Structure formats: C-alpha cells, structure tokens
Image (cartoon, rainbow, N blue to C red; front, top):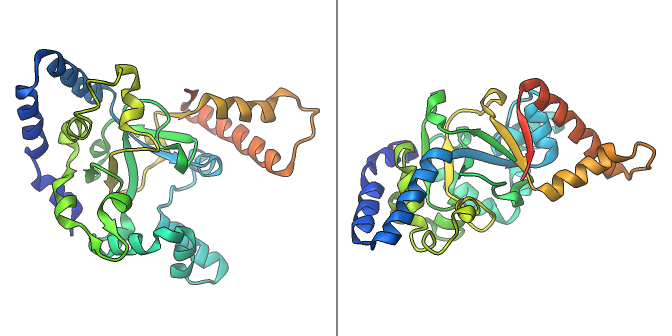
Length: 273
C-alpha cells in the first residue's frame, strides 16, 4: 500500500469530524477545541527522539539512518546478514515490523517521527528530542500521519495489519491539526493548555509521522531534552575536570560536549525543558 496516497484519499475526513464535533459542543468546550487547533497549527512541528550518541552523530553531519539503513551498514562492516541484525535489534517487535513493512510500498525507504507542539517528546526512544521543522512537505517530502504508533496500534504479530483501522486514522499534512483534535477531543477540555504538549507527544501517546526522504541537519530548528538529563550531562562534562569519571560517563561527557559544539556551529539551540 502507498501510505501517502491513502493519506491524501482521506482529505476532508478529519476536518469534517472536527467541524461536526465543534458544532455540537457547548460554547466553553468549543472555545477550548478552537484554542487547541490554533496551538497545533502555530506550534506544530515534527520531532525524532534520539539517544545521545545518535543525536551527536546526526548534528555532527553524519547521515541519519532508519532501521534498515543501519542494519545494512552493520552488515557491510561485520559480514553478518542484515536480516539477522534487524531481528536482533527489533526483538519482540520483529514480527510486527516485518508485517508492517511487507504491507507498505518501499517501506525500507521510510522514516518515522512524531507530531510535536512543545516539550521533549517520547523520551523512551531517547532523551534528545530533535525538532525537524513545522512542515516536512516544504522540503519536498511526502508525509502521512497516523493517529497512533504504527506497530502498537495497527499491527498484530499473528493477524497482521488492521487495514480498516489504519486507513481510517491516516491523514496528510494539511489535516494533522484535526487528527490531533479528534484524538484528544475528550482530553482537551479537562487538560490545562500548559499540558497539551505532553498530551500530544509523550511516551504514553503520540501521533506518528511517516515520510519518504532522509532528514538532514539543516532542517533541525532546535534540540530539547529534560532538564534533569541536561543538568546531569552538564555536570559530568563540565562541572569538575579534576573528578574521575567512569568509562560510561567519559563517553557521555565527550558525546555531550561534541553535540554542543556541533550544534553551536550549526546554529542549533540545545534547550533544557
């Protein structure tokens, strides 16, 4: 399936559902829904959470790799088979990933990210939330958005892809604000506006962005990470150069310093949140 064509085929679906919900809501809830949509339209960007060493490599100018590109490179370096490396990397998600990849057209060329309106994103994938920009389509990509994580929300290891649900939950760039509003329509009125960023994108839940061209460092607007993580890394990297560090801490301190250096050279802000 061409996921981008399927997303375009949904044009108007999520906006229509949102407009119907807005018309049926009382004035206070309608105002909150409208404010949320404005927030997503104003602050919405696409983010990828990365581990420190991955973020440092990327910001230093090395190509960002999807899982298939990584496994192919490791296969070339090691002489091992890329499918074996993929299976080891994915662990319990291997069956779901292979079923989803078989379902999509040119799946090995796709990259995955998340809709983000602020905050540090889904930190289980890495503390470094790399913000790519407000609109991936401006860089000539095709983009599709899914209401939920693709592997957890639409793929069963035994049964395969739930196509009807997946097709209902897809949208293109122009309707992502309405997809987000309908996903969180019950949560928006009872969540303070200051918490909307973590409601939209966190370890608990996020809207997945799927796109078809490698992201580049020149597209990064900023990097966010939890303040506790930033403070810990700053402490081991800079607080006391006479203090002995464990081997793992030395690697982290070096990577963090190199990341800050590369980000500063590239004009990319690294911000504790």
